[in-house]
Image (cartoon, rainbow, N blue to C red; front, side, top):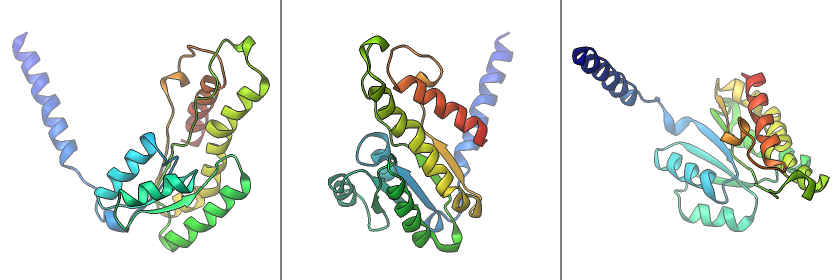
Length: 191
């Protein structure tokens, strides 16, 4: 019994060691667009990928968030102002990304932009409480993905949609859980 457990544990660590040794070639030539980089996970991911040498295109909602991020990173990282709820903003950001990546395409798209919005029992909320969250967390994500998908395909890249455990289990009312369920479904259909 102990021998089997030791062998299984040894195989686990061998597999982990092997996977950690693998690396992606040519990181400085690859471009990644991350939405929602003003703060939180998007900001942290942008800084980490920049430190690893990737060309990061960071989409921020506010000029102040973009400026703070530029000060904390190298000159490789470039920012764009993007409001995922506005079609004109998505179109302008898409045109900017096309100009940045050229014929190489976009190696990665990380849809991170999101808000929590109002969370309360559903009967306490209005339709607008739901719509605001759904527009940012789901509809904006879909529009950004569809706009940039040709560039991702050109580079044979990947789309990463940031969801939540609330996309599998609804614990509270409001638009957050339905939006994250939608992100899960959109990701499955995109796959």
